[in-house]
Structures are given as structure tokens and as C-alpha cells.
Length: 117
Image (cartoon, rainbow, N blue to C red; front, side):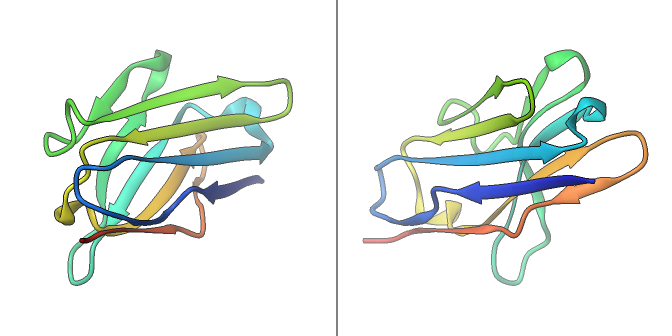
């Protein structure tokens, strides 16, 4: 089992920044991909930014140049960050952390990001 705990969401004005964190613990040695998705009201969940196999990164076109994914690997924990700059109202969504091993896809509880003046 993998546990994912997210933090860092909130209300922010357009043009400002936020950083999300996701801490993975438990059976983390088998994790091969990890990253962030989001779901806006009335829309499907979509990829935002992920680390793929081998550490490659993949970003949604809508966030390229504004968002940066990074990670910190500790002995018993992996923490993945999402630095979000130049936020726009259309970035408003619930952001979910995701981690996958060979058998299971794990999701965090979600953290709300609201971009509004």
C-alpha cells in the first residue's frame, strides 16, 4: 500500500504562485510514475505534470512554462512538488496526487486550488 498526503492548496489571485506538495509513504519502492492531475467542476480529470519511467517529465500544454514538477527522494518517503506560477482562473480545480506501481494506481484526497480576484 502507498499513502499519499497532499498539501498547499488555497485561494490565490491571478498571476500569483502556489506550491503543492505530495508525500508518498508505505510501499514506495515499486512506484514507477508519480505526479499531479486536476479536475475542474463539470470536467474530466486531466494530467497536469508527471514523472514517468526513468524520471522523464510530462506536462499538459496548458501549464508548460508556468508549472514545474520536482521531487525529493528520501529513504522512506517520496515528496513530489508542483510549483505553479502565473496562475490563471482556468487553473482552478481540485488537484490530485497520483502514484503508480505495476499493479495499482493510488490517489490522494485532493487539494483545492482557486484562482480568483
